[in-house]
Image (tube, rainbow, N blue to C red):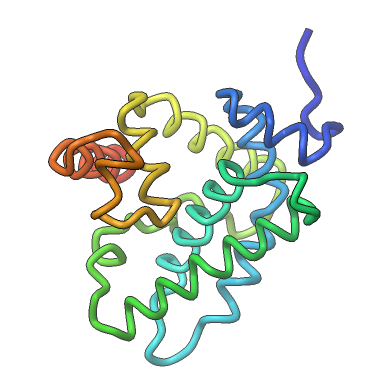
Length: 182
């Protein structure tokens, strides 16, 4: 029997997404694409990163929110996701302004994934792209991506992530390469 994800609460979708349910994460992305776009609009202007870069950072922030959300801390998922998205974009702006924007330069444009109108067809296409990206990542690449999105410093990779820096760097390189190919 197929699940109707649109009827499931955010908290339940987060739980399902963490357990590897790609449809649950795609539904959360569909629900929060407007929030990501709205937050990106707050950072637009001269001397700021491009909109596509901000959107990409926002979606990475949303992914981190799904992985780190704890309902027992008192905030709802929407509130937590908003903070994660905003913080991720603010960090990108700081890196951009500081000249240390290497991660932004290596980012993949979301121009193809960003629908002009949020009709059912474009949201379905976005959902399929996200599911495809999750399917092509190996467990090691998912772990490295999670460490990166969690803001884990390079000095902490070996202790918190349990992997060598070279392994971590190579896994992140493969993640970026796969994202570009999609």
